[in-house]
Image 1 (cartoon, rainbow, N blue to C red):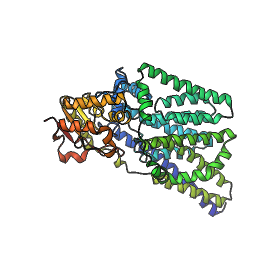
Image 2: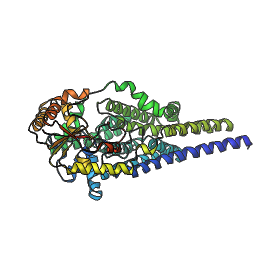
Image 3: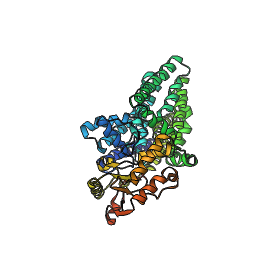
Image 4: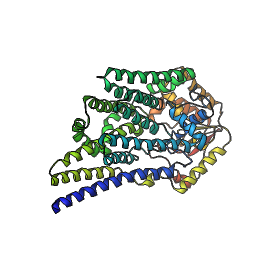
Length: 509
């Protein structure tokens, strides 16, 4: 072997090692960040506390889905994550830590599911490690969602299990996993139908898959709805279907969510995916599987993103699937290059591996952006202590602090309330609106906690909330700051959380 070829092969080995180390580094970086965040005593994202309210009710054997009132409103999610967190809470305590542990374990499952899927298809550890590493690197791009006390990571893990089983030709097991994913987050239904429908040329497996999913998802939906006197359907179907849409997001979606963060990965997928399918899929069924799965995930993600509350967390299933396709595509390109003349093969492989390095590196964000300092830990604990020490019921208006983070059942969560008021213009929503206005007029709260005057609303909030906000502002005009101004810079929250803080307490005159 000539020295030129030896140098070229050495360069390829060094490039592979660099990619592998970067991939492992991003996985390790996630666990470093998660280890420094999961004990943070305040919410890292503004709905964690609302989820915790549901987990507490599940742990205390109270109805998770009940008629909305000023004291409790459920979020618009199906309940698997809530009950899993309540079960973990028996060991770790029913708190934010237990919920975050569930998400961290689910994220670990996602890393493993992506790795083993790609390794099984390619029979190569390297692209499998690259695919998992890319998913870990998307932590910041996704809004630092992987370790939050929310449903998304458990949902993605179950989706990956379902997709893996379907690719293996196990439609019944796939349908069961999809049903569990559906009972974790409703958007799984679109993905399930598309993925299971790829068996269209094999009627028995098609019927087995779709039939099992219909029975498992539909049966559990019916049973839960009956057990809750119809409130399960109200929260998980009626309210989501009546949330407003923001079509303007469609203009920037492809650029901001896909092309900018994952342009190199998408380019490699587009260059290699078609021949990769031809090479790695042994029959037309496999080609249909990849096409149907990609279309289903795209439709589910885009429709969720266009909802008024849809943020980067809804991209997580698509991100996970792109990582899988990326690993498969890189494997194919490297194998193709290996069949060329040695010097050309080494050059092509080096370029591809260098592109993989650039793709990973461009997703890097310093850990300090997500890890709270010791001072911020102390500050969060102090704020929670002050809130918990307040006497009487406190209404929390547009803030990331509520019953969940402060640990006080007297603090009413408002995030879920707004979901009802925005979506339901019927008798249930009107009854809640009247109840809230009446409670303010009668001054039933000891105070109203808010960032600014309660009637200072964003334009999209004016229609559903104006009368309530006006009643609160009129009844609670006296303002006092709950923490000294010089402490204010210490507050920490997830970067994806709206920049609102529990700054003032408004009291009756």
